[in-house]
Image 1 (cartoon, rainbow, N blue to C red):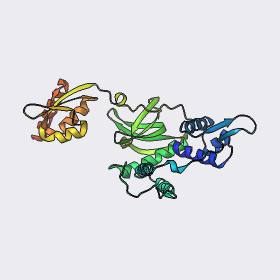
Image 2: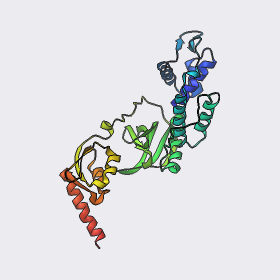
Image 3: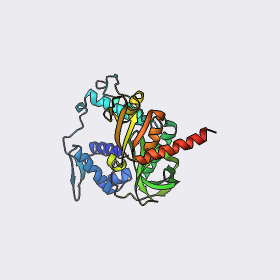
Length: 302
């Protein structure tokens, strides 16, 4: 992982007076271009690094600089440990637990023991999620192709990708990589992936754009939904869309308006409320619900 490599590079630079880019590239088994990007990242983070060309040159930290742990406050350390505990909840190894112990050594004055934030990123799917994340991490670090069965609204099939990032967003886990079927970068949801395996084949890393995870990009607003809810499901509507997504009518019902991405997802969500919700717009969704109700009457009216 990149963060592990950055910490490793910083550790080497703090121990050695000078080191060359080829030496770092060989040590971390990455390209010189990757090392150069890592050095730029460390510089942006405020680490004073200088490089010299020619005989006797190399990469070094400016003389006199040291990492001062006292810049961390107790709150800083609590937030770091909370983040590590969150990662540990989906880890298949003891790495993050060991890292937390290392941070606590010599920092007892910064760790009060009164944890106020507990994060579990595994949700209900830890048994299936942890091995997937572990396999994907290995494939990313070792530059191996990743193959898996994938299930989506357009069908199911086997995909092979060049994996680059593991992403946690919208309360779910994803992998971002170059899909060899679609010939483009794609975001794949881990819960829709099965039989995830690391291929023996390796790949040459390409220039990778960071995934655009904005709602406008991933969930474009195509549909204006207008729904009338009964008052006793107000808590469910607020849980999903917040307290400002509706206005109360004179008879106490909730007039809900929102932009939605997909009409089928809208109908599925509304049907979950049963008779407590009525779609007013769009008319297409209203007609689809009427057809579903007729089909249900045939199924359950036998």
